[in-house]
Length: 287
Image (spheres, rainbow, N blue to C red):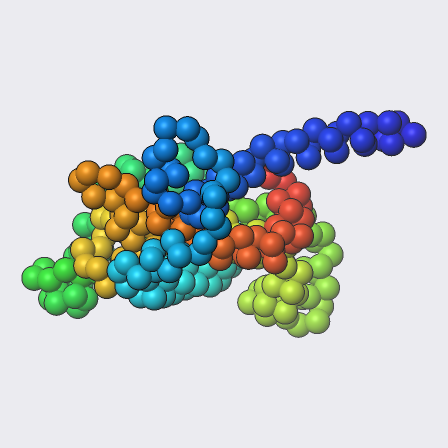
């Protein structure tokens, strides 16, 4: 009875907050349908007079958007797949295996959560530039560009991370010790236990990391700006600068392109929503 009493007001508040959060997205879509005259009009135009998709067509004709989307999809997909493998193995090792120095290594990995990415950008750039035998470099990492202006340069810094390791470790700590004992009795090694028992039970946490990593990689702007220097390697976030010049910003085309860029992330979240929420709850993360 007590729960029922507060259900309606809580639901009403959540509905209002949801609508407030949708306002920026709604404004983006509406702006993408306006003409520049309506955007620059002295009186604010909320709903465009004529709803037309011509802005989307014009936006996609500006630059090589097929290439830009391919770059972002490729970088995001590889980043997510490799991250799932590395972070899940590391999280499983820290949570279920016992080895000397385990807690110290985990503590060291957590230090990565305390370091802002802006601090590591220059060291990471230099490391990627001097990768041996890459991009024209010799065995000393000299003479070429290394992984600069390449897919590896875009992917490498994000394939693993302290947060992903922490997330998986917290999730795997929730499993009873009896599960490991049963696996040992069946003759399973640590690797087989991870692959045949823990991975099938990890759908929620995998979905959580997919949503988080995909969002991070897809929306990244600063690192692609630093590590790429050609139009062929641009991601969709960098390509948005095509609608801005020294004198003006073409807001209608910019919002049209932005709307298309947001759609893949919305699809990923909608498919992973159930497991994403479950993964956040079961891993003990509180927001």
